[in-house]
Length: 474
Image (cartoon, rainbow, N blue to C red):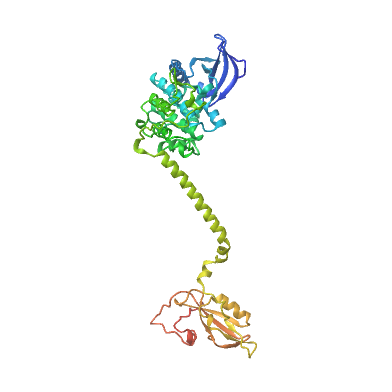
């Protein structure tokens, strides 16, 4: 929709302010009353469903009955040329999501101040029977002196009741969704309390408690995992706000604050309302910017009021210290392991052997073929060949000029491929070109057959008897 478009002969569009899963928001002029307003035009996919339009009209009417300093008022709901739109108060300022992106974590005092105003807005809506269902930073406008306006009352309920939830509203709200919303249970005012607890956590830490690869994955973490203590990420967070987040985000809705008014009161107490320079309450829960809010002479300590934590899920300060010590220990261990690995790389490389080689006895300590000093060209077979790997012995004998043959024998006393005996035996002097036979173990035990008589002339040499030569295949 372009600037200058006139809706219902009354609202002239000026500029587009934002867009989201529900549609786009434009600044416009109400030419009948001469005031600036915000116009939210629904997406075509939503506006084409008559059931949704009817629900939306009914919820817009309920939201239009709300009148509170921290609620962006709803003025009108209409349709023009197939475009369904809602006319709302144009709240001055930036939405809280923009503030967090630009400024990072807010101070504990500022987080409590903004959170208390959101809670007061919710308390007013709940008293009128309106549950927001989509509390998140994008629906909170922060103006001058941190004056807060909560927007989109009624819209989330219409979407939640519609089959069009799958169009994408779940994706944008999964990070703030209550466990009962994620599990499909009945949603009530305490669902808004949970979502606000997550928003306060984000204000205090600058991040979300849960992330995931999909909206469903994040939603399931809301069901199954406890929200960490904010002080674990931001040591400046006092124990009173750790306890506040713990209670607001209890998995069982009955363990949360009884209502949004109690929630607002808890945050106001955390601001130090009983300390010197106590905050002044203006109107319906709007907190004045006094010294306790971070101005000149602002106190550096928050009230130490601690609310009961159902089941004593964690001690915030102790947990924060443990987390720091845990990660410090992990870092030290990782550094030590890295240094040890670098120091031992050379030794490990030199010591890395093939498993088979580690099991085989070395044959290189003494020569397996000795050349007599008095008679060059003659060789004496060493006793060290017995038990050595036949491949190495065979290679050495061939290099000495001997004619080597190999016979397999069954002998469980020697490992596979070890030399069991030689023919002629060790100690024999051989000349270049002489023949020598290596009897090599198969690694198997001899299976004696009393009915079978072996031919001694064809068997192994006398010194290898009992070793069981393995018959060759014809």
